[in-house]
Image 1 (cartoon, rainbow, N blue to C red):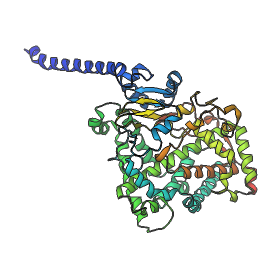
Image 2 (cartoon, helix red, strand yellow):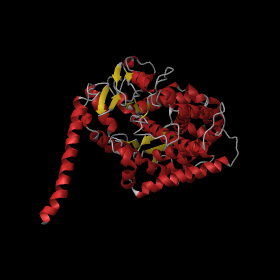
Image 3 (tube, one colour):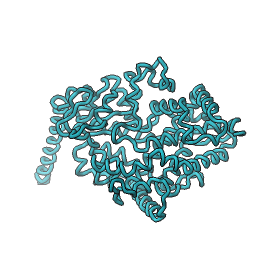
Image 4 (tube, rainbow, N blue to C red):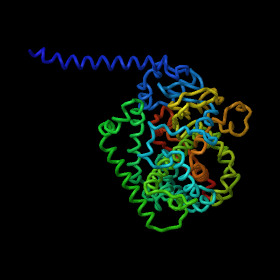
Length: 503
């Protein structure tokens, strides 16, 4: 009697299970042998299913795995059933470049960005992006940065002061990952909300900074889940259960903080040359909504801080690992400046070796190591001369492209001279190097980021003789990437430089 009662449900469950397995096998066979991307090289298992790609994103080493695939399969690799990774310079133009009139845009990959959930520049459609970019562009002009210079200098001055206080003349190693984070967050916080986060003033992180980084832990989870068709329907439900309560609460508190900080800045009725002044202005009768103000403030604070601070940490590590390069950079700075007060936005533009050092840092250790993918439009596209079917996810994994032997000689070696005409590197494909992306959607804050990095690095080299603590000698080795780099402490000994005593 009991066996008969169980046989119906059990048989049904068995049939469903068989159907699911058959569907999966059929789909895998189709993906490998009949899919429009079947002619592109790549590992068969990755072509058959989205599971390897999802595991890749969650495993922390996607940048290295894609690099190895490029080395094995070439500059175009199929890394998912409907995804291609490119590593040649022409792909930047074909995927991200300016469009001719009437050409359809390769829009942001909808699996990773949602215009309804995010009203910032990053997720914006073509027309809305163009409107917001025009409104915001004044905040990042050369004139605006000149006006912002006293504000920026205030925080760099405070950084140097705090480092002198805490370093104990080089006997106490300091974690420069934290100090660079705090400096850039204070600068961008002031530009975004009218006041700093107080990180440097208090020598500790603001709770919002910690909340922000907690909320960023959601990104690789969402990217991995997006590899599966059911995500569009069940994704929000699954995310609700899969995401730790502390992370969900951090995300909500971060949003609340942005709203309150923005309200406070708007009530200032100030004409200070910051991001908000630009975003609330009218350009060609174009304005931004309150939601767009909030989301862009959040993006500017996140993208404008984390990536710049990451590059500063990276360049400090690489300079300390290459004392000959550090010596050349110090010589350039001492040659150009008689006193520290001469270091400003205009004069750092003349430091050609420093620019080469920063470029080489972002090649070796790109702040965005992964792909920021697009999707091919209806009718497909031609990328590098090859037809790519519509609905394909396409992108350039920056770490992989910059470390590929097909693009750079001695790709893993830190050699700034490659950017200064050194004949050893005459055949390098330097135009593949686009750390701030390319085309009409390239990073709006690129000039500000370069300015901050040049000013801070020049002041650091002027003021300190830097050396790595023993526990940070292999700081970069085996770092994981979960959208952003997961950086361990970068402990550095900072001994006051002799020239800074008199400068």
